[in-house]
Length: 296
Image 1 (spheres, helix red, strand yellow):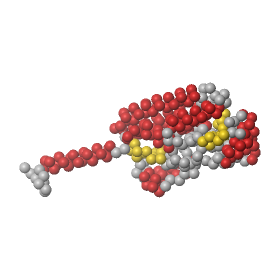
Image 2: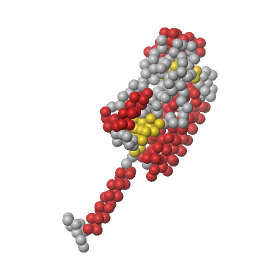
Image 3: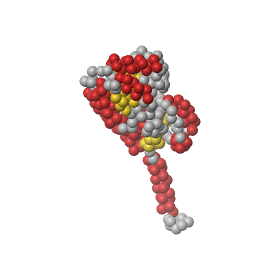
Image 4: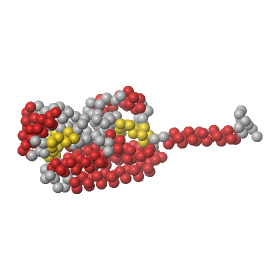
């Protein structure tokens, strides 16, 4: 019998080397995919479909704004090691995405908006103010569960392409997620079925896709990222009084000063809704419930 240098039988040494090589390959294959997303709702989507095969990191954290966000050096380091990036069209991507790709040319970048008709930021407000008009496309498409179903297809396909050994798991998770979204859609439609008013006022125009999906209309105080001028503010106050607006919706990532001015003038309450909440399904259930109360 042949022995290795340390007295281990040669066949055992060979077998041990083979097992170690196999285990190394298995462990490497079993490592979850490193996936980056731009905002917290996307983390919910990717984790629902990817399950334990993904480790999802978010660029814009709680309380931060996708309009003004800048990646940290630590995030850039982690991005250089990521497998996938799911973009969704929020403003900071337009500035940073080229640099992100340059940091990791091997990372697959998937545009979740592909195949979705985007709304203009100038749509859906008709108060007669000075700032009316059509502008760039609205990035807040995730507020519509109907559109999230379309985004889910891109997520499933991208994960399966990068990690084909687990494609059956991704497909099963995708089907379960679609059912969850359909249940959410039914809940929202049932909750809003009895509303008598269909226009609601917000500060930051983040709910246009939600409104579009459920027969509502969003009236925004902020236009093109700017506070309203005096003429627009007066038009909003006049419209709010005429329509009997009972609430103005704000979010923690934006200023609420102009919203408070309008609210005081028309006797409306200020309500905080968060379009960037991570707990997507429960958050939209809450949004629908609040809107149903205010619009009855």
